[in-house]
Image (cartoon, rainbow, N blue to C red; front, top):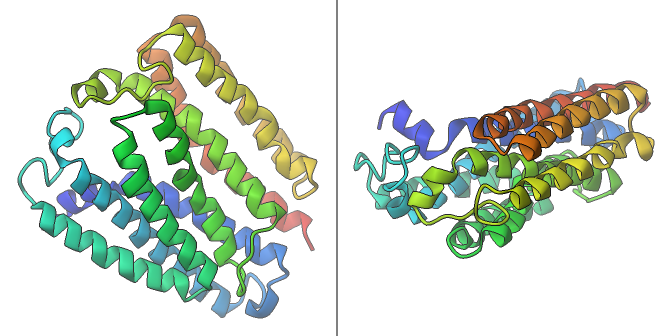
Length: 299
């Protein structure tokens, strides 16, 4: 198998973003819990477990994406952006994709489960929800599919945090990290859906809030961009971040909001594309700022 085909099978850029998100949350969790039994941020044990998280998270995400492409192989043949993926293009069979997905899923779950049981269970839940609930829903109900899909889309932040503790637990910081990524998903996904609406319709997908590029879809996207402003400030509001993360998060959220407003004002694909690219920058910048500010603040 060529690397180009494998990268398309696992949706490499998406998988990298997901793994990055989980790794940031992992380090925050270690710092939040004073290192616990793993020692400090400079502990070799801590970094060994971080490597397990990165590899395990990468494999689990790759598995979910592989299952998604096995299920959607026929619809992928209909869309310009997906018809060159290895299975719809005939360079890989669905059986091969399924075997690869199962192998990556089992190995990834084993690595994550070796950190603590809750991390392993959450990773399995994420695969099942994304591949076998969200994927079939895309052809039945666009809004429901996006709501359901936002959960596994935000779970990496939660999984990473839970993995950063030997006995894995979900606390206030974990919920804040999850909430930021959960709300971000809606604006991010609807921006993509707006740009790719014509292609999605070739496969029978109606993923915008109203199923089409209209004022109502833009209004709903704009509302979620508004919600993103206070949600992004939760680390500062609850005292886990200082003014630096608050200032950067506010600036990024207002820029995000401005881009969403431009979409509402113009209803143009170019505005949606700018919002889409803005979403790619938004999440890593806010998460990294939270990490750096949190490490400096929490003693």
